[in-house]
Image (cartoon, rainbow, N blue to C red; front, top):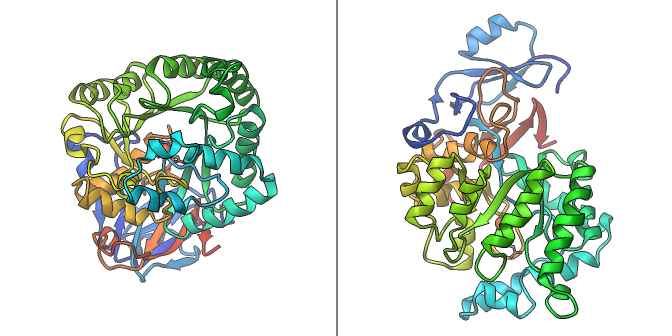
Amino acid sequence: MSDRSQLFVNAAQVVTCAGPARARRGAEQADALVRDRVGIAVGADGRIASVAPDAELRAAFPYAPLVDCSQGVLTPGFVDSHTHAIFGRARYEEQELRATGVGYLDIARRGGGIHSSVRDLRNRSADELAALATTRLRRIAAHGTTTLEVKSGYGLSLESELATLRLIRRLSAEVPLRLVPTFLGAHEVPMEYREAPRSRDEYIGLVTGEMIPAVAAEGLARFCDVFCEPGVYTSDETRRILGAARAAGLALKLHADELENGAAAELAAELRATSADHLAAISEAGIAALAGAGTVATLLPGTMLFLGRQKQAPARALIAAGVPVALASDFNPGTSPTVNFSLVLTLGVSQLRLSVAEAFVAATVNGAAALGLAADIGQIAPGFQGDLALFDVRDHREIPYWYGDNRCVGTWLAGRPAHPG
Ligand code: NIG
Ligand code: FE
């Protein structure tokens, strides 16, 4: 919030994504409503008051300070609805291992992968993790993202899961991003529950009987997620965990059909999950089920790229079936260590075959819908938060085009400068 209204003027283009405050599907997703020669008035309350030609805005708000956007193109701040941003060390050694042919789940079976991040996180103090996360989150903000979902899931014990979620809450006040917390206690079955006398069933009992009630009682998360995948959590286990989460008042997400099909998209639809994420191995039946349920399909093309897998999620078939598609980074130390959301747009167009407009809607309005926030963020229209990103380009299609580059020169959160802060 600023102490008074301000006007964002002189932009070459404004990608508004304006329209209904809900997930966009089918042909709706193909209209990002790009406007030339308009500016944006953001009120003292941090919300967008008007989108109109600059001259009209200046007449309507004669005393408002001007933010000169002649450097380029304004977009809604990106809404990255799937990340695992709280972690300790980088897992660069696994990238090379995979290049020699060792699979992602093989690395996990050897005690690497998620387990390696769990061992590491449990040995770090909250301050150490906060320092690491703050640097990474600032880099994310510097690439045009203004809202970030952040999952727990590298603690896998009552104390470390709660500590991770408390850290996300603390960081919300310290970093220039809106953070949306998700409880992912079922990211893996921790090593200590894999052998007698303990069991995976006992761990699931801990998740449903102690972790979820504690998370809900402290109001630490908005969503509960499960890595539902052959070799990780089964459909029945996922149903049990998400049933407890729903009963505790959490909304639902699933890591679904990421590597191998396990009818997880169908389960997401059955549970009326807010989103089903990954979906590189979704079936025809899964696509139809998501379409019927109105669940957002959150696609993470950076993950498949970084894992070196040939198969991307069938974005065109999802859109054709009427499933709203969101794009997210999956920022995490194992499968997608990128902070660059423009690169995710590049992959959306060049790998998933989205149009540029579809990719922008996926990165804004549909990302917001995947977080239950479509009424508040994700578009440049009156009443929405003044969350904006400015890019040093003349045409919005250059944002996915200059791949790997960062053209973002500024972001604002509710009208306040977030980057540079
Ligand atoms: O979304 N698939 C599960 N979780 C992450 C990877 C986590 C990790 O490898 O640390 C993902 O790809
Ligand atoms: Fe993930």
